[in-house]
Length: 77
Image (cartoon, rainbow, N blue to C red; front, side):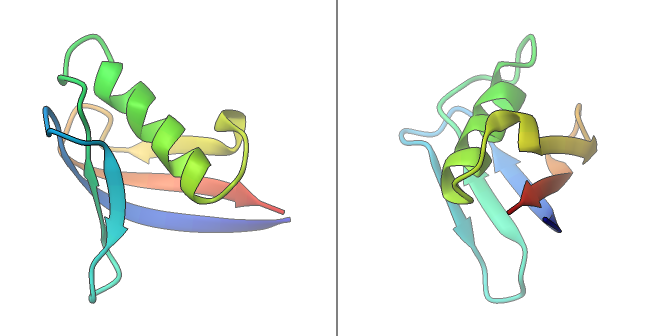
């Protein structure tokens, strides 16, 4: 099992949910959910789990839970 750390810039209330990587290695997450009651964080965890084909339990927000830039840890197989 390996660990991947991602720096993700979150843009809530987008038209579509998507996760893409920029040329400098950071990730941009466009989320449909508003940043209220952790809805955007929940959607982000689900989106990262889909992208890396792992369970939601393998994705952890390590820093930035209330900010737009987040540090995410993914446990891969």
